[in-house]
Amino acid sequence: MDKEQLLKRIEEGESEEVELKESCSSNSKISETICAFANTDGGYIIFGVTKNREIKGLVCDFDKFQQDISNAKQNIRSSPTISSDIHTINGKKILVVEVQRATDKNAHTFQGCVWVRVTSTNVKLEGQSLIDFLKNRQLLCFDEQDSDATLDDLEIKKVQSYLSKRGQQDYLKSKSLTDFLVSNMLAKSNGKMKIKNSAILFFAKEPFRWFSQNEIRVVRFGGTDAVNVIAQRDFKQDVIEDIEQTIDFIRENLSKRFVIPEDSPRRIEIEEYPMQVIREAIVNAVAHRDYFSYDSIQVNIFPDRIEISNPGSLPRGLVKEYFGKRSVRRNPITYRLLRDCNYVEGLGTGIPRMINEMRKAGLKDPEFNFEGDFFIVYLRNAKGNIRPIEKFKDLNDRQINGIVYLQQNRTIKSKTYANINSVSLPSALKDLAEMIRFGYLKKVGSFRGAYYVLDEKTAEKLKVKQ
Image 1 (tube, rainbow, N blue to C red):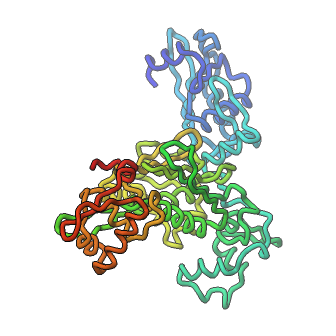
Image 2: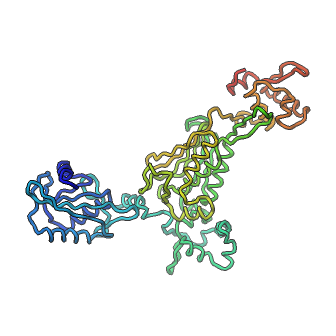
Image 3: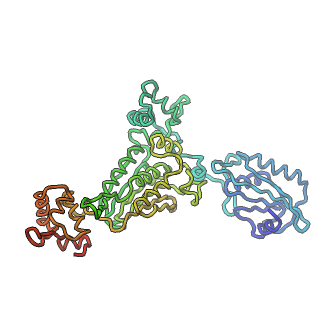
């Protein structure tokens, strides 16, 4: 810090990064301030300046003074990084101690307490504030904490399934369940078995009984607002089962896009969203959510988009500019188990892959937002996607194909209907007659010149101009 910068700091007064001290009166107060700065964003302790920003200077043995500062630093666990410089302003000497910010996965304590800097005050963290601090530093991970579960609470079939995915299907023939848990850091056995939360999330008979937040809630809405609920499911099993059931339910509640190429009368069926993108988003939500939060993962399906939200703000050590380029793991054991089951790669490639898949499908890039304590992924589908299955539940697949064809071509002949569905002409005529009886179609003309069009009400429902 040069003289001009120092004078500016003094002029601005005490803040989250500056502490002004007239003298070194108390080693414990200095230790407290160094600890607070190190646990926040670093800062400067400026000795020889009053709280009112008056530069009085120091008259002391500077060697001894700096030794006192060093002793104050030694009282802190783990020892932070500091440096000091002597400056002369208007013939008065002042000492500036610079405190470096702690590394991402480190925290400093003084007298067994964690101190942080809030505005111009040192604050001792307690209760929820302390838990949040340790979580943000990834010093407190939910999946690494001990539970009260016993071996009887675990489902051996789930363990066996996991081992099979790792190519270790014969492991339990020669080893015990305890051996598996301890060797995989899912439990510790120091006289008494302590099973970690991660084992509950993956292998418990009833995971939801232990952690009610272990839930994925999926809701499909009829409009673009979260008002008219059409379908809803809550998934409360183990991590793997929840992922698979959630993806299946989403797939069941998505429409298809139908394209009929000019050079072929047969339709091509296209997923509304690339399922690989949805899978990646769900797996990421499970892997990176904040399990200390009692909120569930929420998936909202709208006609024009999907929103996937999970509790958990941006992890410390990951700035927004590097999101999607760097992998930071809030739940390290959960992430490792998912990697063993081939759900994640651990290479930080998931987000770029989602973007590429959406672009290949001709869709907008996914949107990734941190909103308060939640991370939300927005996936948007193509405009004007058709939802015939929702609107015409009394029609079979062949008849739905006919409706789709009419949306794009306005008229259809019985021979064309037979071709696009690969059925005989009598079967085509039977289907078309049934659609007329149901009120979906009208027949125009007779004999070989006859063709079919959408009934006025059907055309209005589908917003098709006749």
